[in-house]
Image (cartoon, rainbow, N blue to C red; front, side, top):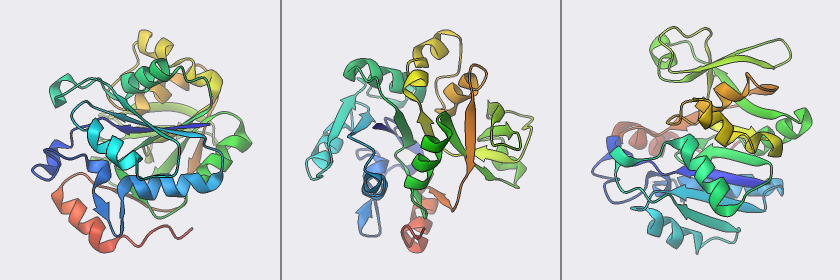
Length: 245
C-alpha cells in the first residue's frame, strides 16, 4: 500500500510563519506534524512507500526532512509556485499517480492535521470492508458544516451521498481529510476529473466515487486538530498530548 500525503498547499492563513516554510513541517510538541502522521501509520506495517505531494516552492524542505527518516519516502514536486496556480488536491493525487506509475491501494491524507488516535485503526477498518473508505465525525455547528465535506450514510456505514461545502448540508456527519482508495478505485481518479468532479478539495473525488461504487465511512474514534491559522497553531501546541488510542 502507498500513503499519499497532500502537502502542496501554501498555508496563506499562517503567514508569515509559512511564507517560506511548509505547514506540515511545523513542530507540535517534539515532532513535526508529518512525523506524527508517518511514524504512527508506519506501525501498521502495511505501507511500503510514503509519497509527499509538494509544490515547487516547498519541495526542498520536504526533501531535507525525508532524508532524516528511515521510512521509504518520495517527494513529488507538482511544479506550482503560487497559491493562485496550485493544481488542487485531486489533480495533485492524479499527478503523483501518473508520475510514479502507482497501481496499488492508497491511503490519502492531508499533511497538516494531528490526531489523538492512531490511523492504523482506519487502515484496519478499510481492509476489513475491502472497499474505498472515509471517516466521519459528528459536527453540531452549522457554520463548520458549510466548510466541510458532509456525508449521508446508511446503517451499515455505506456512503449514500457526499457533498463538499454545500450551502445546505444534508447531515451533521463531516468527513475529515483521510481517505482509503482500493487499487481499482485509485485507477478511476482521472475518470472522476474528466467527469467533472471538483479538484480543489480532496473529498471531491470521493463525492464522485460514491456514485460509482461502494464506499464506507468509519466513525472517527478520537479528535482531529486542524491547524488553520496562527491562533489554532498556538492552541494545538499548548494542548496536544500525542496519540492515546
